Length: 284
Image (tube, rainbow, N blue to C red; front, side, top):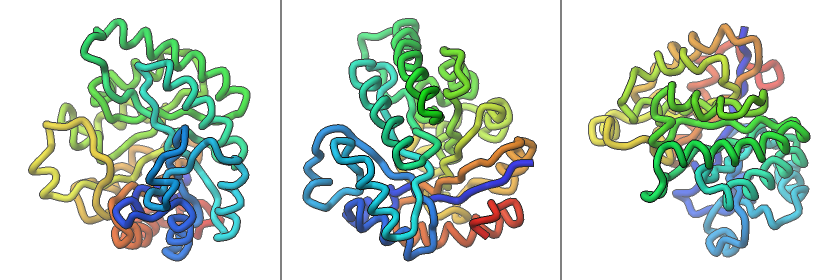
């Protein structure tokens, strides 16, 4: 029987132009005990001047832990999204994200295939992704950190396409981050049937709801969206999602991915009620 943890993907503070430290403080004030920070390479201008929440991997990894410790938070996963079809970028970014995750005690690094260049055909795309995943699978195994691929692009918009990428490399450390909102918006297949097909590979979930106006406007026209609405305010059938995941004999992290501070506030009590006694003991 699965147990669940609830975390906050820090995208919810982007609309408020908050930096990482402020985002951590807000997360703790709302009542979250675990977070999923975004990480990047280099020195991003908006992050450096305090307007963006992403954490630079040029910093000392223990600075992230120090900031979180001050607010009583732990890091459960990292949003390390990297272009799998662009190995020259993805291998370095994901390697560094895995090492950072290990340093701060996080178990997961989340990514997706991102954009396919126009000059690259499907076979070349999968060859490039195979190379990227093979390279980083060895790093993941050394650090015991799962790299979880989510539905967000042209290949991962179907369960079959997502599994094909996950299975490009035989490694228990390459798994699935199921995004409830992206899988719904893609509109290619029933998202609950898709979840059933990939369930055995799911280690992490982006708990993203899609409001009804957003669904009406974009479903079937996009393969994903940066953030959703408050969990419980949209189209996602959360009881059905958990019923599909319940048979898994492991802990699953539900990382809330919404667009505003108010939505993050509303999502936490909603998910706590839906999860009920399946919530990890230390979060009850």
